[in-house]
Image (tube, rainbow, N blue to C red; front, side):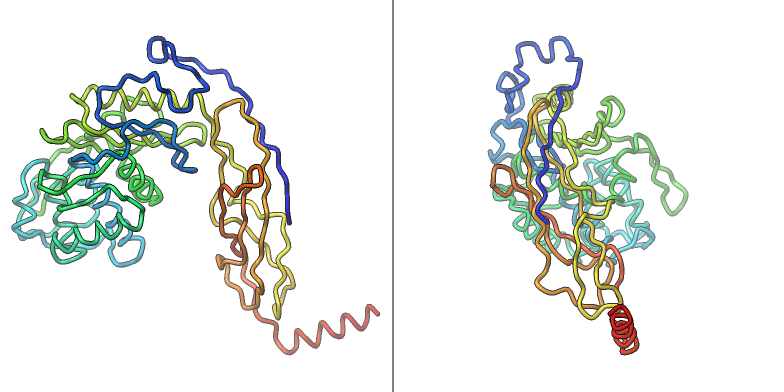
Length: 389
């Protein structure tokens, strides 16, 4: 199946905030008129990875507690992989409880559920909970840091080096705005993360009944329309940092600020980037992973000759509003699909072309089980074919 689609993005009416966009050109993808005080900034579309704005995005800088994005990413991978559960209880070590800085005041040698520790990291940027999670997963923070750096390499984070899981000042630790966006984009793929990321205020209950009240360090959760996730960071060395994500009308943006001079500036500059992105761009779905594809995939030796197929994930075209795109979708089935086939099994690939250049691709998976044909099925087919003749 080769299907050509003309995707037309209509310029939608929008209202610009007076002052915020004064002098900006809507067709300027990189919004060069921004006059940010932060040392580095980055804005990207979370679904396509398209960069909307960048300033010194690969400059190596300390990022303070934004390091915890990687700590959380590894934790959620362990949970989704079945190696860890939110309901698991762990005993907090003396080292973890004594971390200081941002914390939820964990008691040494006391039991806490993983869910409470995750909540403490996401909402309150807790150093003690971060080390407790690191020790639970790898046995020690040092071994966990090795795992952090391995994951960074896998994600193509070429300007990042972790030396701890908290972001507390330590020689040799650095990252950049682009790399922060990459690891945060990976974190956002874990649905359970959103259970915690949009919490504004909550509490941690300790084993003996003591309560620690916590509030989200990311103020955009409450004050920016569509923001449902993010991670702040601050040390005197790193300045005020922020990575946040907001979603409107099916489009999700990721905004990164590194080393702003004050907290108000980091939230203001992140909001400015979000405003610009939502006002000037759109994200159109060209392949829906909830709807069967209009393709026929033959199955050998199955109870059915053809299997229903769907995309493994949705595909989007991110673009300035008012831009027209000529898109081609080319479905390539596996050389041989043989029964039995399980629902979710890869049976081909869908490739997206724009102007004959590949811009994206997605695995095509079976949307149903197909059992292997039995001897009696084969005989029945022969009889049926014979009767038709």
